[in-house]
Length: 86
Image 1 (cartoon, rainbow, N blue to C red):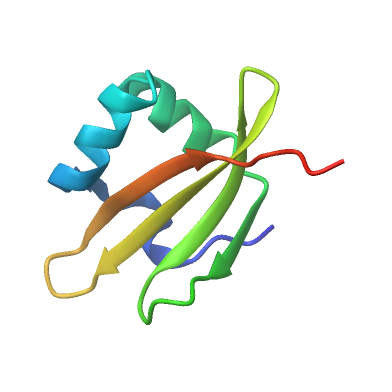
Image 2: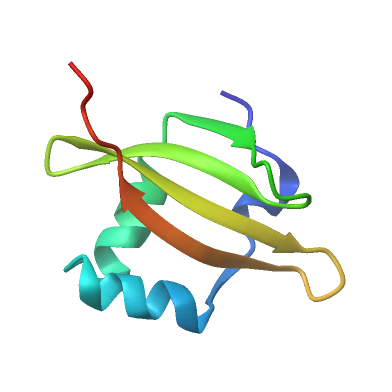
């Protein structure tokens, strides 16, 4: 996959994702690994945001990102496991 230019920008974490990291028991290091091993990227329903599909401990996860073009920062909005619906 060809990643957008903002993919390599410095990450910034909003308070919401910091709360989710604690609630869902994952660390910043794990989150960075999830982004390093991402498999796809698509626009989110929310304008200006993107959803990354990745894996963590054998399970599919989504990470929501919002690039800030003025500051050249990539904000991590949230991350959540994808439930299997089989």
